[in-house]
Amino acid sequence: MPTGYPDYFGQPGFPKLGAAQELQDDDSVNGNTTKTMFSITGQGTIYGGYIWIDDADNTGMNDMIIFVDDARMFLADVFKQHSRALFKGVPLPIFMFYWDPDANKFGYGISPGITFTEKFRIDYINRDANEVEYFFHCAFALVQ
Image 1 (cartoon, rainbow, N blue to C red):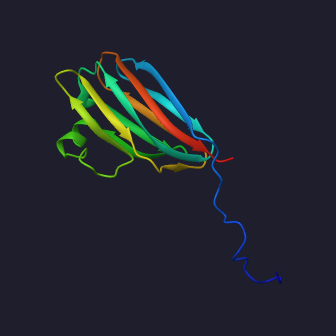
Image 2: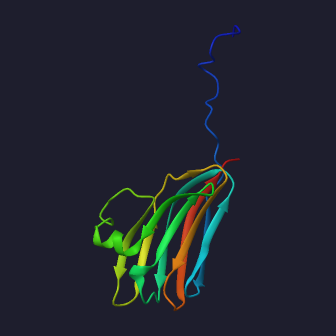
Image 3: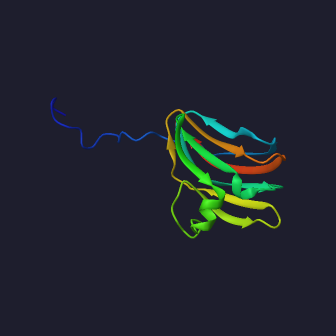
């Protein structure tokens, strides 16, 4: 091809993703603390996932924060998301799909399609004095 002309038939400039991976674990967050639930380092995309919280006495007081490349992207305030019905098909990065304040349990979904160049992280803020238990599962792929 002559120089100076764009290469319309060459390879696209999109990054090639590696194989799908999954990350899952269960742990707890002590009372009145903030803890990183999980973190993924590298460049990639999120395919989706969920977080299940048990034994949260004051569920409505607790929050989750998504960080993309160490920048705060989204704050998931449990009480506000439920009271504003933000669990009914709203395309948010993290969304509530279950809340039972009587049983002290709630579940969040992690939306697919979140991309990151350095790091993806979710922190949990426990504003209650009691320990909170959680389980998460996240599917993702990193750029090769």
